View 1 (cartoon, rainbow, N blue to C red):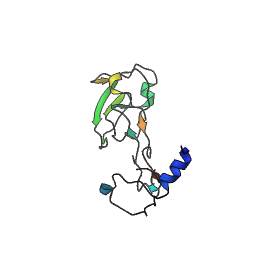
View 2 (spheres, rainbow, N blue to C red):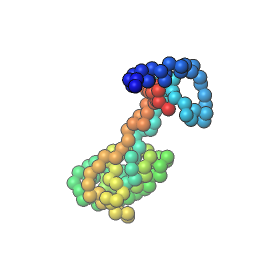
View 3 (cartoon, rainbow, N blue to C red):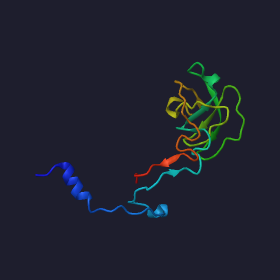
Length: 144
């Protein structure tokens, strides 16, 4: 019987590493990265909602429950173009850019459908670069 180390040495001895080559992503299945891949952009590029819910002002929900008037809706991939005053909220969906003045998103199940009534506080905002950031490693060598 041979040792694990000897068996490994015998198995790997005839193998010769292949050189690196550039291929299209569509042709990369089953391959392993030869070098680091840096992101060419930041994703998300701005604060986005990390879940379906309501964008609310922190001061409006300093104590909960709070009753807020829903004044608009923001689907994923679109920005909210309206204005939001005190005591108002905006329905927001996962991936939608957060209106600039909001940082909290009480989840949809914690609220009523026609009048946002948060029962708990939650910050559900994904900041810029939380998936990957410009010029930072997106994939490491040896991964596939």
